[in-house]
Amino acid sequence: QSALTQPASVSGSPGQSITISCTGTSSDVGGYNYVSWYQQHPGKAPKLMIYEVSNRPSGVPDRFSGSKSGNTASLTISGLQAEDEADYYCSSYTSSSTNVVFGGGTKLTVL
Amino acid sequence: EVQLVESGGGLVKPGGSLRLSCAASGFTFSSYSMNWVRQAPGKGLEWVSSISSSSSYIYYADSVKGRFTISRDNAKNSLYLQMNSLRAEDTAVYYCARDAGVGATPYWYFDLWGRGTLVTVSS
Image (cartoon, rainbow over all chains, first blue to last red; front, side):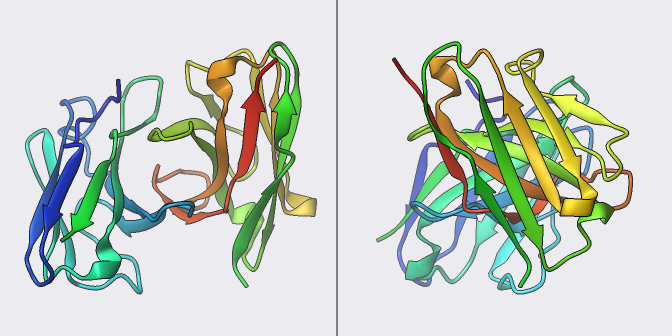
């Protein structure tokens, strides 16, 4: 069982917006602004999409945005495109001995 | 080109050992904390271990503590993971990942990943 809880799957049509939630505790998501999101296509390495809750690395489209409220972080993808179909993982620093925790991952299907 | 390339994976029997390597290029390796993150087949990501830029700070996940040892050689731009007493549940793709923070303090998110190396523990 992962430390952070994500929905197993979400779907949307091209052009639509979707939001993926990531729920933790006050020891991780709620306690720190070190929430990040990764995109992973099948057979590929993860790619950093959002860091420190809402910041985008250079090269990531502004269709991707992040936010946080309490113990829940969210990744929103607007104007869905076919290439957005992938697995998405949230991650957070944690005050536990683990230091870093990941969510179980969400499979995004673009219909 | 900025990249990380893992090697050393393979098939090993339970109780056996394996040493993974990660070769870094295209950036100042000695300035960054580095990590190993693994992914069991069909499963999610799991952070395994972290080492600070000068090897002063080392951290392990509880699941590997006492069995795995992370190290680095800044002169060779290389990161290592010595894995002993391997178990079936250690079967995974092991990724080398760069911490996004420059300097001694990690940011605990990872902005550069290798393509991974597969470790299979089976009799």
